[in-house]
Image (cartoon, rainbow over all chains, first blue to last red):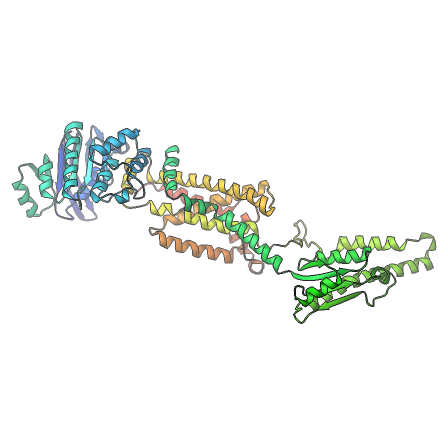
Length: 223
Length: 377
């Protein structure tokens, strides 16, 4: 499980995150909401080891972020908001390319299955001909190659059609239920968050989000 | 490393034509430019006709001397052919070595040895005539000197006579040894710079160096194209850090470049008769590491490929003018000798393995690696 213990983050004198503590159990999906600039991406970057907290500690399956960053990273799958794939490659070539650089060896069949699980069936198609939704799915599939325990997604469904959004949501649910993965993701879509997530973490002081969250019948943690 | 090679080959496969073109550019462009220059040089030789009316040693020797001039293209013709080609302006001028040339020279006669033809378009007639006259005077001078020596011997030391032919042979020998028109000037311990008949305007390896720099710079654009903001965080969760990935790719590029450099050596030997030795091979290896690491460092400074290409072309233009690889800079280096030490291409042009400039990019790359990853916050 993931334990976040009293982390704070400040840039100079500006305090971004203040004493945030929570935990995520295997199989749990956590939504991260808040207004722009509230610190969602900062928190996600800290959880992804891409930034360090000013204070506090994070532990993933008994491994401290401070002491065993390299080991921790092997268990994290990070889906960046920018689509980080090779446009001139096909879906297959993208998966093979990133598999070669990955910690874990996967066969082509396994890689193709990863895509099919996400309803991404255009294995041989060049990425530049794919829709935005398909590209988002590939972006996510690449992050799952090394079978991470914790999946962190930065607005994974931004700018895509409703069908692809639904398919990605379903896949995230399957990953949590069937593979016991811990999933945390940021989004501005409250419907999506309240449908998908087991718990919601609201960051920032904006009462708008807090009022919206009251309507969702979920466990809510606010900071 | 195998994974890095695999991923790099996947990229190359997508752009194999352009990659092959840039890898081959130094070879193709150098061979083309040298061949074109040679053709232009050959075409710019002045065509003249030579008519030899007697088959004597001196007449044939004069003909061979004219043929060996790097500025002339000499056609051996009959008098009528020569006149006809002068009339049709195919020849600049024609010169006839008259019958009895050798006999007249040996008897010290200087009249009516050579007859010449020119047309109203013969622009080089006068200098060629002067050149021919100087060769004839050389022969008459030799004969006159030999006559003087034999006359002196007859009067002073008749018992130690040296024949006329022996004197002429000795004169020719001395002339061949000390011919000022084709001598090699050298200073102590220096290899002389000789004058060859097949003078090439361009230096093959100098030209290759410039094209290699250009192709290396343009092929190193992968570093800019692949350093996308979205892609960088992925490396934190991969087997290779970004710097590790970039350095291993640099190593692979150096190996690939060296293979094509090896091909350059073979092609230049076959097509341009360039010699191969260990100094050249050592100089190429050191030069290749220098330009690849320098291009790598330069590419790290850019985020926009097109801006990088512009800077690369300006840099190459600057090197063409100031490196001495193509355009001679002897005047500049005589006035400012420190320019030779400041020129990073000079050790390669001198074909020495050790290039002190190599330390600069290697040190900078080491510092870049030692600084660690931004994502390792």
